[in-house]
Length: 211
Image (cartoon, rainbow, N blue to C red):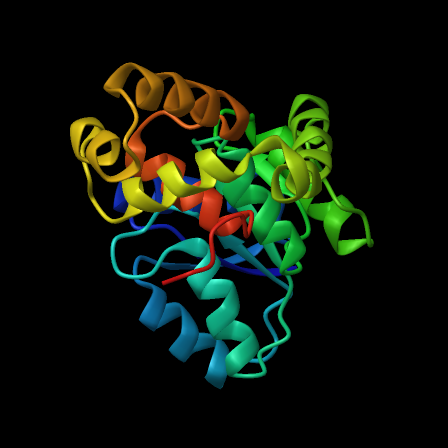
């Protein structure tokens, strides 16, 4: 099986290549550190069986990379491997055709067996991730239809525009305490950890239209 690994951490990238090659003689791994190099390689080498993709990269994130593959009509399958378990981003990646999620905490044996399963047509997702994705999938519809009220959508839009709680309160003629209460509810619904994360997840779930 010919694999292309795209991960911007050189130590992890080389370690993965060595570990998989030593574990299974049929694994042929090409390692790339930059998304552009991976795209160029895939354009010239259509014999790659699977791309192992990190979601967090400086020049082009994983979602953008998958979209770039589609734009170039590169049909090589992709599986996500990441240390982060961002369910919203992973949900988006799976919607775009990714074939699973492989945690970086897995052993070489677990990774090798999962890659073989994927080559044989399976979609591999750890059970706890699958449960979380099921909730995200259900919530995506609920969020857009009812869970975020009109006032919460207004506040979320003003957060995206960079307004502080005080600024939002002034615009909407409500108290800062009310703004804070709404934001706490929005953060809980979206599973966000910061204002930026909140806006990103709202856009990914299509609660807010992209800029």
